[in-house]
Length: 60
Image (cartoon, rainbow, N blue to C red; front, side, top):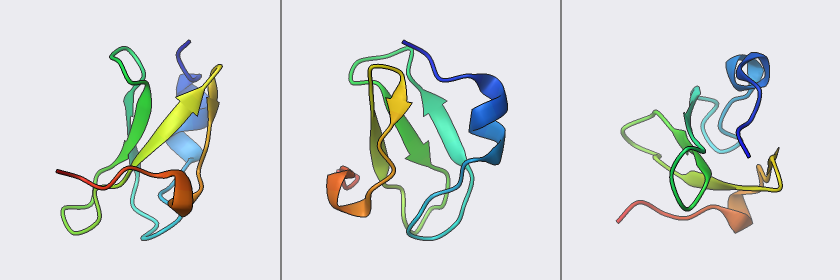
């Protein structure tokens, strides 16, 4: 389930405050930090972003 575009525009990475990129059209559904240094991927569960650093996936 995609996250509303208006919500994506105001959300930021909790770790570094960079904007997030919407990757909910793919599996796993995630919001990904656009910072080159951070790059954390936050899961989206049932259309709700889980913006907890402890729940984020580190880039490979």
